[in-house]
Image (tube, rainbow, N blue to C red; front, top):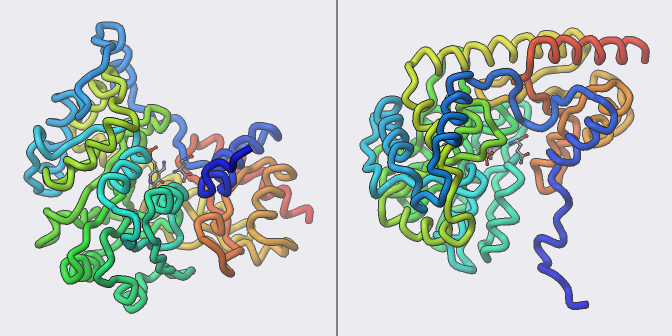
Length: 387
Ligand code: PMP
Ligand code: GLN
């Protein structure tokens, strides 16, 4: 038999699927894969049920239904002061994952260099490689995850076409400030490069912080493609409704990729998300406050068990140093071990790195029901007290 595609054939199954399957097999509480529980807004669910019942349920326009594109543009104005033309600068996708792939396929040529920051979300690299891009990976180091400015500057050159920037970041929980964003903006301008801004956690920022889109910095409007996800903003990750905002010259080639990847996204879900985005400020504030409270509960519980928990400014995730627990093995072995033996699943942070020595952090998702967090902490507490 002839060999299948070498890049995808060489990939393992994504760690999120692996850990969720293992959790289900062992009846473990799943704090691994990043999805929320019990936070879905009832009005959004009702809006979707109504829209699906009333229809239409046929192919919508490939760019997305007008109501959602207008809602995405109005949201960008309301939260970030960005002026966006919904007819020419917004496209709806089947989740941020599709948007990321469309952007890479639509923007780069084989041989173009793409700058990425590690730890990184697992879909980035295979898609860049499959599109013929040459990854230039810059590492952030724990425990402070400081933007390595020198290494980042050294990764850019005349062949750099694109950067992919996740902010707020998964799995580190870091939120880049205006100074770091300004530094990145300077590099993009100097090297005439574009930036795919994966901002799916834009509304999940804590302690009074505000998310700043790179696109809102001077000179960045024409260089950035901003990606959002209703899965994260409305706690419905299974819906897979995402959106890309970019100037027409960048959005057009990305739309050409989208038309051959998924073409459209379920119209009833788009309608519900359009209504959700128009919700009052209190929706967004309550979501962040709720998650902040869960973050604090999980962080305090893990600390009292003996984990050393890293700070988290945004996202769904806490990273915890496992070394103080005296486990003999790396983070992969640890996460499997606690799933099977303690009944709590987590994700090893090393799976966000290509290789290297960061093998002692487990990532826990705190966007779960209070009872699930309490039970997970009780299980871990009992398990580590016995050892
Ligand atoms: N980017 C990051 C950083 C993520 O953590 C996720 C997780 N779901 C995605 C993209 C994908 O989002 P979606 O489910 O909308 O495809
Ligand atoms: N983004 C989620 C996480 O980091 C999972 C998404 C997925 O399963 N592909 O856990």
